[in-house]
Length: 139
Image (cartoon, rainbow, N blue to C red; front, top):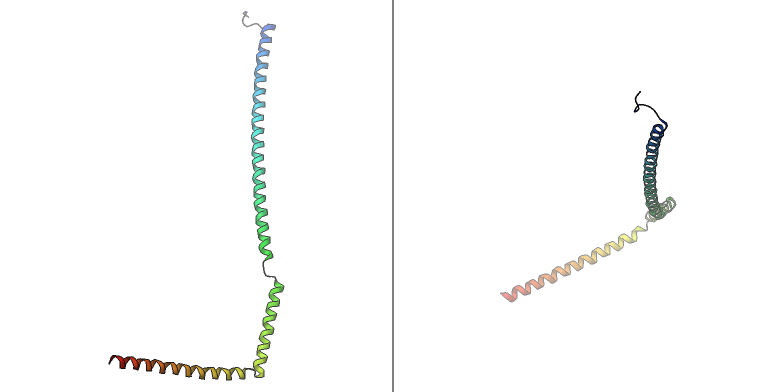
C-alpha cells in the first residue's frame, strides 16, 4: 500500500469530523423543515378554526332568525279556534235563515229597488228636458 492509501488516526478523525458535520447539517436542515411544516400546520389549523367559528356564528344567526319567524307562525290551536268560530257563525246564519228572518231583508230590498227606479226615471226626465231646452235654444 502506498502512503496515500493508508489509514491513519488523523485521516480517520478527519473523515469522522466531516461526516459529523454532514450529519449535523442534515439534522439542522431537518429541524428547520419540521419547524416550517409545524408552523404551516399551525397557521392552517388556526385558519380552519377561525372559519369554523365564523360558520358557526352565521349558523347561529340563521337559527335565531328562523326561531324568530317561527314565533310569528300561526299555531294549530289558534287556527282551530278560528275555524270553530266560523263554523258557529255559519250555523247561526243557517238557523236564522231557517227561522225566516230573511223575510224582512227581502221586503227592504224591494223598497230599495222601487226608490232606485223612481230616481233613475227622474234623472232620465231631467236629462230629456235639458236636451229639449238646448234644442229649442239653437233652433
